[in-house]
Length: 115
Length: 107
View (cartoon, chains in turn cyan, orange):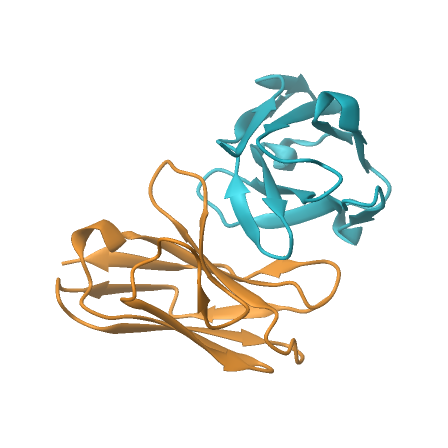
């Protein structure tokens, strides 16, 4: 069945780089897109960017040049990397699959940025 | 960026009632709007795609409508399990943008 699972650190130091892996099963990354969405504690959802099935990417300009999304199709993994972390980057980070709509989501990984 | 404004921010209703949640886009997005339900402690779940199409397994109590800038999600015969925050999402332009959510409380 379709599954997405995010793995990453619980805690990241201020100004350091966050790396999260989304490992998928039950579908191919060359057929479906994978998005990254985050949610600060008690707040709403924010779309960060996407890895399209053809290998291209799009990013939310709110993250300027801090954010990078890549993939390894042979391992069915999509990677999020974001540098220069600040305390307001503390959030749960989700990956989600789409053809058009985000129909399957991972459970998310909670990341705290600590000073 | 297309701003999605949801109203109300929160609402309280009784079991069996009908509620309407609203989402207004700052510019036309056609039918490129989804609705997601997030119950406490869970990941968001797709309810409605393309403004008015129920996702697989979604009860027909949930109805989406709208085009252009104005969209609604109607929940008929509210059940206790509908306690959640509901988000709209536009995917008509990059960046995709979510509304700030409507929290539905059950009296």
